[in-house]
Amino acid sequence: MEMIKAPRGTKDVLGDESRKWAHVIGVCREVAEDFGYKEAMLPIFEHTELFSRGIGDATDVVEKEMYTFTDRGGRSVTLRPEMTASVMRSYLERDMSRLPQPVKVWGYGPMFRYERPQKGRYRQFWQVDFEILGSPSPLRDIEVIDTSMEIYRRLGINNLSVLINSVGCPKCRPAYRDALRGFISGSASGLGGLCETCRERFERNPLRILDCKNPECKTLTDSSPSMIDSLCGECREHFGAVTRGLAAIGASVSVDNRLVRGLDYYTKTAYEILAGELGSQNAVCGGGRYDNLAESIGGPRVPSVGFASGIERIVITLEGQGVNIGEEPKPRVLIVNASEEALISSVSLLHELRGAGLSADMDCAGRSLKVQMKRASSAGARFVCVIGEDELASGTVGIKDMSDGEQRTVSRNDAVSALQTCLLDWGKR
Image (cartoon, rainbow, N blue to C red; front, side, top):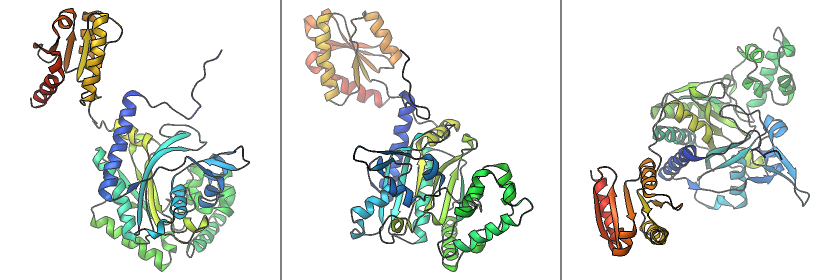
């Protein structure tokens, strides 16, 4: 019988890698608390129309990448491809407009998109997500970008570049779409210079042509009109306030006229943070403002801004830059025993040590003392507790300091307190 393997585009996160993930999530939680975000845990599947209406039915995500199925009740549901629409759905459903505004929410978890797997990109991938809902202020855009940068600063990541653009609003974007279509149609190669996907985008979603990685499409649009030149007064003022604010906090920012993001709900600010360790898939963070998302899913206008960052990509960046996140946790105390009778006593001591908050482990296989001591050394234990026949008979425990080999004997009843003192003294060295 053939062995069952994990589906393509998924991965097991184990051992040292899982420790790195936990470190990333821990730093995100620290930043969230310092910046005033509250954690939210949301469903990993939603009604399909939340994403088709919220993200946009002409986007690649909705057209080609969603994991959608009909449940046993005949309802169309989708594994979430991103978290922002779910956060907004929760905001509206839970009537969070009654709370002091804005509402600041963060969360993390798996997302699902049917894409071609490659470095830093999977079909099940994990993201951290930060959102500020209920404020139109450009200062909140600055805060969101600063939040994402602070996460990377605390993680120890260097040499990041921030790209920013404005994608306008429903008032000024139609004129830019027409200008872009006119530019492409009037070019020497016309529509024939576009890839098949971009020819399909031409009428429905022409801004996405700017984001195409096909070399011919990039060449054709290199000199295309700039969205910033087409902004209405409100969007131009907003973009100016954001860029001035970022300069005031010392952020190094470049304007990228091709940056449009892949989801239709974006308005005004769009930004990405890039790192050089991921090849062509080098965006470790992406986000922006989405003032019209709430209306597209049946709610009132809720101006909002946020970002998402892939945990897999953050870890690749940490590894690529050689960032040290500390050693893998090791048992501070390892119990070795010399007989079957000693096993029961060891279990009792192990229970007490762990109950006292000490990291401890023991050998359960009945191996020789020599083998157990060797295992204790390779495991990096700070101290070893020895329970042999002599210790059982005398009601004592032997304690060995693995750093200098010093040994002493204490009463079994005093073993926990003695080890606590040993570890305290060791920590002061």
